[in-house]
Amino acid sequence: MVGLGPRKPPSRRGSMADVPKDLLDQINRLEELFTVPQEKLKQITDHFVSELTKGLTVEGGSIPMNPTWCMGFPDGYETGTFLALDMGGTNLRVCEINLPEEKGEFDIIQSKYRMPEELKTGTADELWDYVADCLQQFIEYHHEGEELDQLPLGFTFSYPATQEYIDHGVLQRWTKGFDIEGVEGKDVVPPFEAALAERGVPIKLTALVNDTTGTLIASAYTDTDIKIGCIFGTGCNAAYMEDCGSIPKLAHMKLDPNLPMAINCEWGAFDNEHKVLPRTPYDIIIDKESPRPGQQSFEKMIAGLYLGEIFRLVLVDLHGNPDVKIFDGQDIGKLKKAYSLDASFLAQIEEDPFENLSETQDLFANKLSITTSKPELELCRRLAELIGTRAARLSACGVAAICKKKGISSCHVGADGSVFNKYPHFKARGAQALREILDWPKGKKDPIEILPAEDGSGVGAALISALTLKRCKEGQTAGIRDPEAMLSGIKAAEPKKT
Image (tube, rainbow, N blue to C red; front, side, top):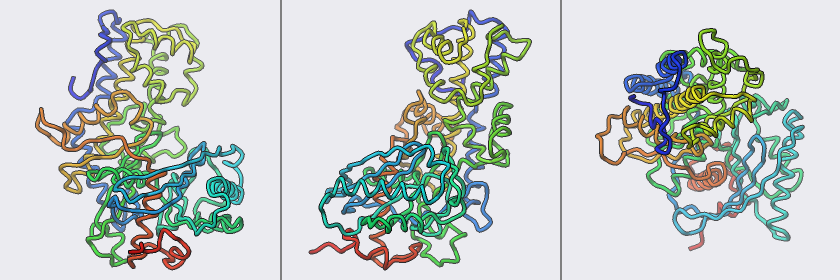
C-alpha cells in the first residue's frame, strides 16, 4: 500500500488470514482513515508554505513565526566559556560549555536539579529564587575560590513565549504541569536577574533561547549543512533562518533586508482552521476535549503526547461497537482512562518481533488488565503502525514546506525529541514522505536528510549567547535592549589579544 512505510519488520511475517471479517473490515476502515497518500501530502505542504509566509506578515496567521533575534549561524570558531540553563518539566539543567579554538568543538560539564512539585504551582518569587539557588550551587561547586567575571548565560525557556529582544521574553502560557501565578503575560527577565543579583551570583543573562532555535544553532555548529532545526517529541516545532527582508512584521525596524534572523515557527498551530489536515473522528474528539480546543491542530496529530490517546480512543470506540467483537465481555476500565497510554506504548507494539505478538499480549495484560486474542493483537499492531506512520508523514510536510519556501534543494535537518529518537521507523517513514512530496528521483541519495540533532538547550543556548555578544561587540545591536550592560564585566565579550 502506498505511503505506509515499512509494514512489518522482517523478523515477523504476521498474517491476516486468521482475522475474522468484523475485525478485518475495521482494519480496512482504519487504513482508509489514517493513510495519507502522496497527493494529500503535497496539498498539505503547499498550504503549509502559504501559512509560514502569512505568519511573517503584520497581520499574522495561525503559525506565530516568532523572530528570535538570533541573527546568523555560528561559523564554528566561536570561543569562550558560557553557561546554559534549561528549565524543563521535571529537571533544571545547568551546563557550562567551553568553546575552544578548534572548529566545531565543545566541552561540557553539567548538573541536574530536580524541580520540586510544589514549585510548579507556587509563586513567581519562589520559582526564580530556586533557579538562582541552583545556579549559585553550580558556580560554587565548579569554581570554588575563583574570582570570576560575569559568566554569560543562555536561558532555554521551553514554554510558549514571545520575544521582542534577545534578552527579553513574555511568557504566553505555562505548559508541562506548571501553573505559577504572576508570570504569564510578563517579562521573565527582570525578576530572574533580581534573584541572581540578590545572591551576588556572577552571571549575566545574555540570551533567552527557545529550545528549537537552540537545536538549529547547535546542530549548525557541528554540521555546516544544517538549515533547519526540529523537535518531534511530546510537542513539535521547527526553526530556520529567514532573511529580514522577508519578515514584513519587522519592516518598521528598518533592518538590512539581507540580514539573517532565526524564526521559531511554533508550527504546532498549523491548520487551526482545519482546511487541509485529514482529521479523523478521533482527532476531533482529542481537540474538543483538550484544554484549548481549536488550537495546536497539527501538534495534536503528530506529537508524542497525543499518539497514545488516538490509539486508545479507537480501541474504546471499537469495544463499544455492537458489530465488532473486541475485548468482548472484558472490563476495559483502565483503557477508558484518558491519556493512560503514551507514545511508548505504541512503540513497544511496533517493536514486538514475535509472529504471535506475545510481547504485545503481555503489554495489554500488564498495563490494561486485558486479555487479547491473536486477531485482536493483529488489529492493534496495524493500528499502531497506521498512527505512527501518519505522524511521521505529516511531520515531513512541515520540513518540505520550509525547504520549498526558502528554495532549499539540498540540506541537513537537525531533529530532536523522544518521538524522533525512539519511535520505530519514524525516520524512515518521514524520509519516504519527503521523497513523495518533493519528487526526488529513485535510487539516488536523498538531498534533504533529517538527522539526530546536537544538544539545543545546552550547547545551542551557549552558542546563541556567544553569537549575541559577538554582534554586540561589532555594533550590530538590533533586538538587544541594553548593549552596554550586556558587555560590561563579561570576559567572553572582550576582544582577543593579538
